[in-house]
Length: 444
Image 1 (cartoon, rainbow, N blue to C red):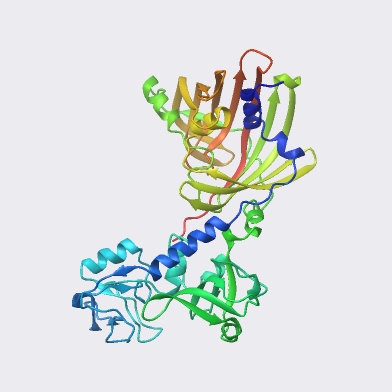
Image 2: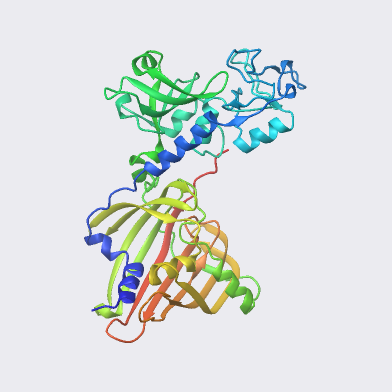
């Protein structure tokens, strides 16, 4: 029988073979992401703050923009400036302030919110707060603010409001948008939502039928929907094989100490990432303990969503031997490459010790693309600290990587694992070659 270490190593480095015979894995639960959305929205509705007369204006700001702050002079439920505590971030036309930005702005004497006189009103750069679509953009943790006109491009339209789940939205194009918290009744005739309205962000209840009459559309942010997993692996065309990579070194190899520091800092296979990043890979696995058996496969790998706090969900489509398997899994985006390898082989708490490392900077040519990159060769030992009979696992990694390639950056890599001695000893190798990739354009 294979030892515990051998089994762990076999799972880690021969992960290709197992999915081909395993049942299709269930998608990663989305509850945590939805809970996070509601947590952010609720934080704006319950945020406590104090205002002074400096945060109030009913007139033109220094740029000539007409501003009416949502204070008690504008609305009986508006914010007070008498030193009492206000609850809820005030409405600001065009607003996209984080809570820290809002508190800092109020303390600096910026205007607390901005009620527009009409849809043609300009936002005031002297105000802080959020508007309806700004709240949604912040709750969805988007890199920039979207409007009620553009939010739909990020979403799937649901066939029925009955399909709405926490964190979904009801959107009125060029009008208003609300974040669904929950249905109030079992028949789903009333819905409880978070919204940025005048005078502030609040939790409200609505009749669903009336919202539909007012042209509100039920929408789901794509990364919250299992359909997006399949899209994340859909290349515009069948993935090209860009051919073998060529490396042209520039200068001498890094000194030994610098090389070891560089390989310890190498990003893991899922960092840095953006939702929509994807790569097409050619894999070959070899195991000496199985008589030199080898298997070729193509893997399409895409980032479904960034879960925050270092977590990321990925979708993989594995095609080998006439079979196809789709699976979605949770990974860590904040691990280094060697941390990932050590954890996979030695379990929690395992740390690698780099024995040798060589790093040379230069240029990688791949098909018609020329990329800045580096060649890497390293040898490391991994020992699991909690093992009853510790065994050293030798790991060798060689390859070419470029920071311009998503999902770890490796253009070519070979991972060899050697578990010495006893009935559990074996050698295993995985070779990976980049076929093609697409990098999500950063949101502007």
